[in-house]
Image 1 (cartoon, chains in turn yellow, blue, green, red):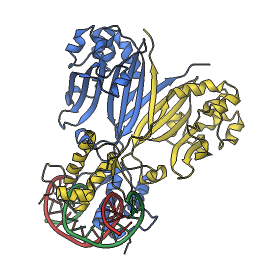
Image 2 (cartoon, chains in turn green, brown, cyan, orange):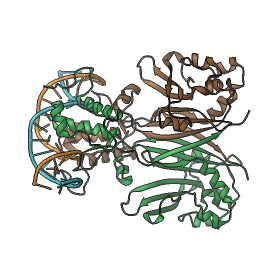
Image 3 (cartoon, chains in turn yellow, orange, green, cyan):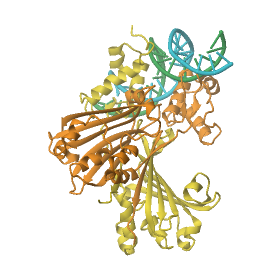
Image 4 (cartoon, protein in one colour):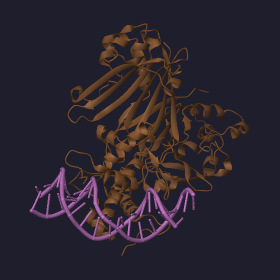
Length: 270
Length: 270
DNA sequence: GAGTGGTCTAGACCACTGT
DNA sequence: CAGTGGTCTAGACCACTCC
């Protein structure tokens, strides 16, 4: 009889999962290939179905396999990665000075579209909120300062699954010179945030991106149609103007299985 | 009797976990506070201990709680984040032209130290390998081209847990002008890769960082002493010289619970 | 020693897939 | 329809922590 894991040893479910993991890494189980079923594993390892299933679950959490009810688990095929490059910051800035017609057709803002627009439902809400810590600290304003908070969403029209989500905060004081920005805050901004800030005389000269990672909650997994084993990339974008003020802070979330972030750092020549 | 999840409803374990998750998010369960035990949950929700435990497991996978055997699970306290800024690229380049004494004491290479060096064991291995796809493609060399592959590790001397890990590839052809680089490849390079390349007349003018995320395997979790629910940040650094050649590619891995990546993008002024 | 979580059993029922 | 995985039960034993 196969014993439980004894002192110092790894659990049986871990050993089962590891053996399958190594088969995947060696290419013996190619992407798309079915992995051993629960029945297979109970016989091969002489364990209960529940333990075999636990091994399956470990493989899902590692992001190695995928599957739906009713069909066997299969080795996950890498998804196509959407690339988000920091070059977009400069591109967006260059567009600000172009005529509006050009801006509209080259949209590289939060509402950028890479697939036919009809497949997606865009959401855009705005409200005015008081700044709370620690956000107030990042923006360099006193807690309680009024902020324009805008959220953007892009969701699949048929499945309802989220594809993009971000929030942006701008101190209201900075943009009260152009009431349009606040009045139309819940509509897309052609030309993006940089253009809107340009209309009140703000020039952004530096953007700082802070990248961290975290696991989605069960609710996130539902909203984004995420499988197990797929982490989030979280990006906080801090926009700094020519007077060294933080004029906008934005938080965005990207599923790591379909996103690659690219940052370009030119170095000064000798 | 509490039923199984019926059609369209979420599983009981998910509902249990969600209720606790919301208590955490609302601050009703502060960091460090114990969450309801398995016993508590079996009584409160009228479920079997196994289902209560599954709810616990979900909370761990979301990175919300932590705990060791024998003590109750507690709300996770955010760890101190180690910051890795893209500014290091320019700083390292500036150091190349400084005298060696200065380079040694300001080390900002892969072997940078933020805590007393005695606590860590550094590893550095080197070998010459043929380039395989898809790496050869990134380096812009033919498959089979000889590469110098170097791996760096930094591990806790007492626990053995990994703290840093990275691999670097350089086409051997580029550096054969300085045999020292290859002969001493398994030793730390004072001044970093940029300095070594400088000795064979290579100037790096641009660095591209590609960031993705992925879940660690069970083996990774052991090696890095990672808890459940902590993803990896993976960074591929591509160094490009003044002739637009890719002269080095490096892959590094960072546990997301203790790392924040910062990328600075200056924008051209109007 | 009492209490905790981690693993495992040997089933059951259900939802879903694919034929 | 047979076969799959997902959920759940009602326990058992173990490792570990904390008192």
